[in-house]
Length: 90
Image (cartoon, rainbow, N blue to C red; front, top):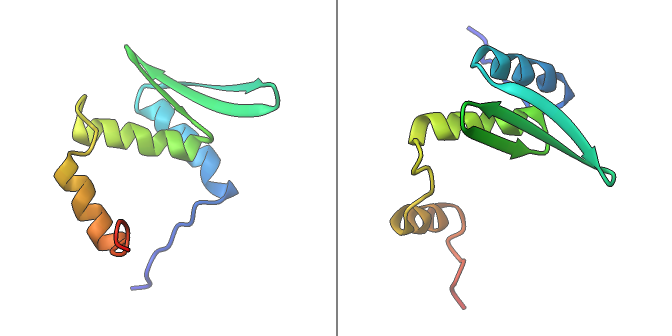
């Protein structure tokens, strides 16, 4: 079986938007002072991002981690150790 790959590109914008709608979000695009922002709302939750794909990522983040979605100090340290091992070292 061939490996499937999906890259963040223009062809993911509409499917991301459609997934958000299926998840019950309302989605709007705002262009203010030449800056584009996308907003998804569901109940009292509002997500803001630069594109529908980022909104979808935020919706998954909130869905999986809940209202306390922020990373703890230990989670941040683990991330930095793994992906930026030289961070904070002279």
